[in-house]
Image (cartoon, rainbow, N blue to C red):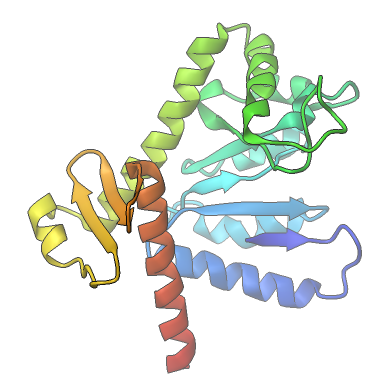
Length: 231
């Protein structure tokens, strides 16, 4: 979700209304958000300000802003800044900006099939190229790449665990599974304590990270559909 003014501002009003509504939905359904921003940082910041201490969590996707904009995003404790291949570009200002951003407040992204990091810039991007972004980020923070990789994984897992806690409260795994419907169409979902959702579709088994994303996405989609029908 987010606001994109790269081409023009024709639909700015509508984008602002939609963005705030989506933020409210995220809070209501206790889901993290991923913010897309192009030439719209001030507008996004203004919409988010009232929710600074609301418990809203998420990622500011593909951040390429200034040190000042990074500092303003740091005001939101539940947010992390997404860094992708842009940080490796010769004229990128991100290396300088990141000097004022704690390593624990960033995550790595790809933005595939775009923004391929150096040395493959210009080619179609893919997830495997995140290693080049990782190496550059480790260099900026003067840290070992493996250590940075472990920290980034921990950041994602922390966001996942936080979301699971907010959504399931104090329920046990057995109590959660008792409320999960497993229709007889080859679909199976089971919550595993301290791990996440184990989702199987036919013979395909997804790991708990992807399984959790599927469950959360399905819940949000159904909830939004019901909300629209009711209104």
